[in-house]
Image 1 (tube, rainbow, N blue to C red):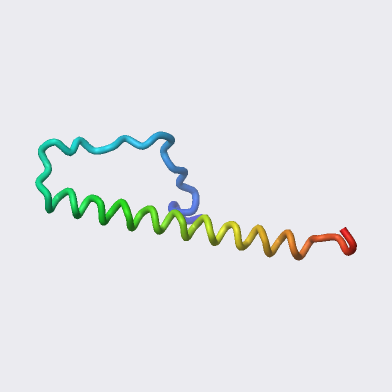
Image 2: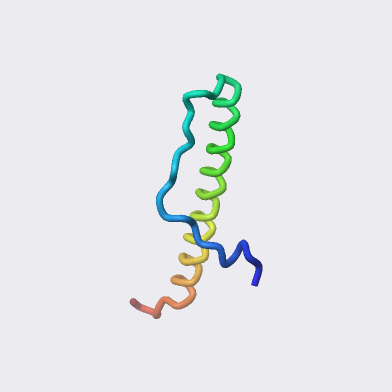
Length: 63
């Protein structure tokens, strides 16, 4: 299996220390975080779609 598939997220997010960052660094950091959020939301949607398809496939007739 690929490492990416087996890697589990680290529980608890440790935010960066932002005190010494300039505005451009902060904007870049925000853009990276937003991209990561979008990636996580896409993964959630994909998993929910798979689950919905499986539920529909295995649904008992009349139930």
